Length: 94
Image (cartoon, rainbow, N blue to C red; front, side):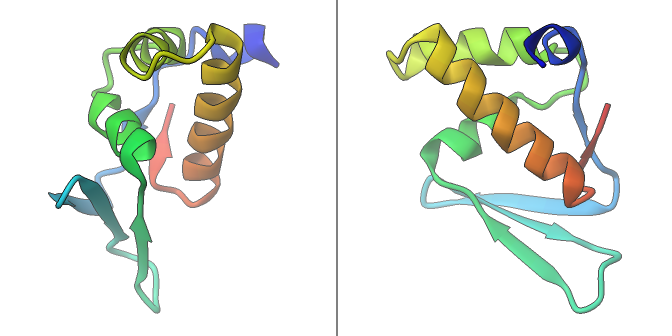
């Protein structure tokens, strides 16, 4: 799975609105009814900030494991799982 994901470039859906409130991203999918509100922890918030449509998943993983001082393997597993979940919720695309 790693080889398939690492070069993908995720970007935030234009159907979302988000704000960072007290260090946590609050993300709403604007077209889902009823509205779905997603609140991310510190790491998830940082990943959300890095989803700029320019960075690959590999580059996002690198930022996370350098900033949070975790192993590269752990960073990839957690970031990949989080990004795939965002995709399932239609909060991002590739």
